[in-house]
Length: 300
Image (tube, rainbow, N blue to C red):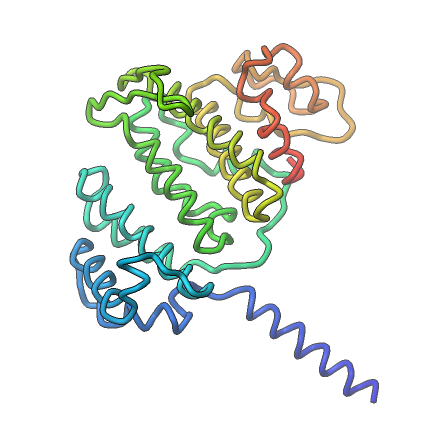
């Protein structure tokens, strides 16, 4: 009897592991609408194929956004991701080859119920090639493709991926000489950004998204993943802009000193977290409640 119970428990455990770790494209209700698009090498045509397949089989979903269940929610969110990538392609932010590569990176990524919780933020920063670009246009082109390699993105479900894709799309607006006018919640003029204000625009929009998802964090558990993603994006950008030392978050438990976040010098990595914030004004993005929450959430 004990052997039988152990065997059943092993089966249940393995089933749960399989259930919570599978690629997007391996799901039949998704692959059904993509299988006849696989031979298309032009991403715009590929995206149109995906759209037409959904339109033919699920017109109410496409034309009236009538979502009946989670499967249809996944389909509409995946379609929106494909539209975002196609938009960046049409705007010449990325090439056709890059669009295809990023799309297949998304649909072949594993969705897991939980992402790895790590306190090694220092490793994430050092693994980023984007910290070498203090020019915003070069930085954002780099980070726009690099962020999909982050575990926090790969382990997210489709709707969370779509939310992150939307956040990153907003960050591309200042490319190619675009002028961006930021409106407040009442749609009144707040500030204008030009291409020279790229990093300021990035921090402003990330702060807005961070605050919004922080205020809604109890409504959706995956909002916590989005907050974590925004924290990582902000830190990578701060290091790239040389407003933050690379090892500022390399904390140890028995510590007495640290590098200052505002000095940009490497300094000592053994420190209490409080030192990081000591000399920063309350208006600094690192002082925002959502940012501090994101660090605590992931054990950074």
